[in-house]
Length: 323
Ligand SMILES: [Zn+2]
Image (cartoon, rainbow, N blue to C red; front, side, top):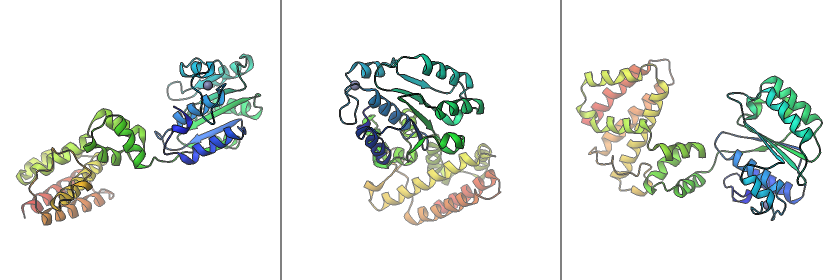
């Protein structure tokens, strides 16, 4: 991917483009921001631009020998470190030091990419610090981190920060469309992705979340459920407040959409797939149900047991929908 094609991170891209155009590339960058918003794609595109022998504006040409080597992950002046298991170990930094000493230059620059830099163990971080304190000539370090503050202050102080934000919904929606996700699922997936492309990709691959299926199941059957049915279901949520929070959020979303459907506002629906919307509840029932769900959602913040909160809400929902 070309640097100028990366969307939703305008501030970061502009900063890097300026550095390339003015040929003022500093020797170490720290890309930080939430996971799954394009830090690594940007880092690779930036590295490729730095190494390209025939750069066009700010974008790598994609056809020079450097670009071809880069794309086939076989570039002599590019060194990529990813965590070995759950940490980056000192041996990995030692290997890098060796490479820095002996690897000949091919073009003008060498680039070192350190993925998930926050996973460096302290000896590794100290070894890297030594490298950054006496940076080898024409070598650019790109550290990528999901948590900038997870790094040693001494390392932070030697890197130019580049901040990445959560992606705008529009960027996520476009991406899902490119991936061939059907239009009716895009609003829900976009909402669930919460600005994170990685999350959107997982949703696109994994289909609709389980919590939503359960919420539909409950709304479809709540008027026929006996207390015994409810108590049996409640066991599943015992000590699982996180799962229950998700379930309540889906209940609220579905109730919202059912209300919009009653008003004929179909274009505003978040759940646009049609396999759930034929429940025959009245607006007043839906409004009352929504109140109960939001109250249940608030109760989840308290110390009360998840199981009890679930039972309480289900009984109230049953009454509301029958009233
Ligand atoms: Zn090139």
